[in-house]
Image (cartoon, rainbow, N blue to C red):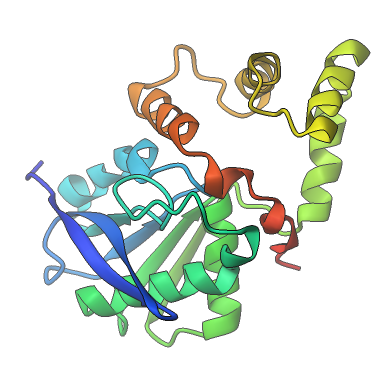
Length: 225
């Protein structure tokens, strides 16, 4: 596979200018590009890199970018919760598409939170250049997601559930005990491959270093009903 091109894009939002880091596989002029939206939010795109094989095997150009607040994009740990709106991330996607000149012809792939962003983008923007929308493990409703998650938690011992609840109510979710519990839940229900691929390990290490975007409670309002 050819080495990807990398760089940053100026992203103006309101009166401020930020940087969006990107990585592109393939030649954007060789065919319709696939733009990949990563999840969490706040986890960099690296765990999605295996789909870059499509560039070599199918000749499909792939555009990855780190949404603001993670990876090599601008980190903003001091921004309040109300800053992190869906409009912010849709505007950033608008900017990425315009920068690469692909607004009139592109496919969109969204994983997890990225799928929520993609769905909201389609509903809000009605992009005329979008040809295919691919949603992977993306909840259609945060309310239903909570119901499903609680059902999975019910499979764990009561003491385990009470421990998680205690830390969530106390705002101590950064504690080692809570993080071990979340790791146990993730290994059973979210990321079941053992051992975890290096790409996945690396992005969670990046998340631990700056969890501002992931931890803000503002995202509970982003249900795509």
